[in-house]
Length: 392
Image (cartoon, rainbow, N blue to C red; front, side, top):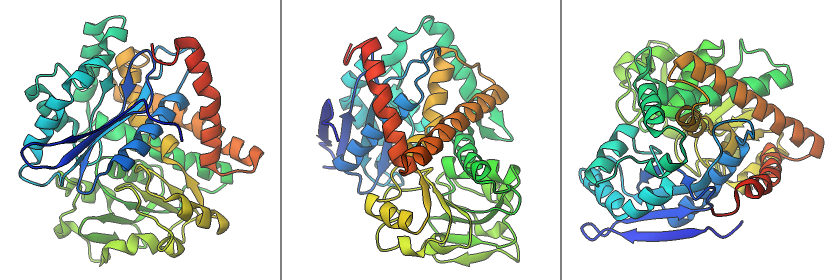
């Protein structure tokens, strides 16, 4: 693990709560990484996420593309987003981070925060935009900003395009793994932990691809039905935090304890909520053949080693959930327009190629998909540095 370029801890003068910013690396003087808010967020967690962002950016490096990957960064605030004081805390954090956001840290929604909330707080903190540091790199700033704003205004079946592209990428990762293994989509059972932005969109795309969503989990517990859940009804009944109103459950739907999602009979398990959800103690309950990391760092390294010994394949977060970040930049830099089908087509093509490359590399090297992804990054970072320099 390399030492981050910048690591800082901020203490709020009003509440005493802490926030963190870690810049792992700069490319062309800019870094990219979302801002999360959760109770218990730590500097160590944010540091790992920032390193992951460097990897996600490098994995999407296309020398012929208009979007040139940035460096990796991450922000975090130790607070429950449901806390009545959370919003004003967010504004104060962004006000304190303003010099960094203006200069070299582009950020946006992550766990516990929506983009609308980040945008509103950023404006109140005196920022032009949460991604304004990238503007000097754009050929036509006005056209690029309009394109991104138009893309954020696009809705598909009542859900914003920005909330769907990440799940589209996760779903395509699942489908690619199934196709390589010769497993038909129909009849493949899936359990999704977390029904927020990423988990909800993933469930929708997988259900529409013919897979059966047999369980979902939210903060209230696990909802399961071996015959398949009505995904659209559950999505329509979510609140802003991804919690499902149980009034929409059908007679065959069962309510199970919160951690029951771990051991649901399913071929594919998609942790799409908090980090560190699968550890050494509970990994033995997993019966799925694939764990697909829609969340950031949901499987602890020691647990992943034990899972591998049981022939459970983990598709790593740095690949699987990289679609949202890439979509932002594909759109802003002009590789795609503000159109849902164009976004989904580009995301599916890019993610399938990346997952195929990772799985082929893992097979050839006799390593895990994560080790293969790391190997690809190790090859691409020097190429990016040679082209753009380490910091400039």
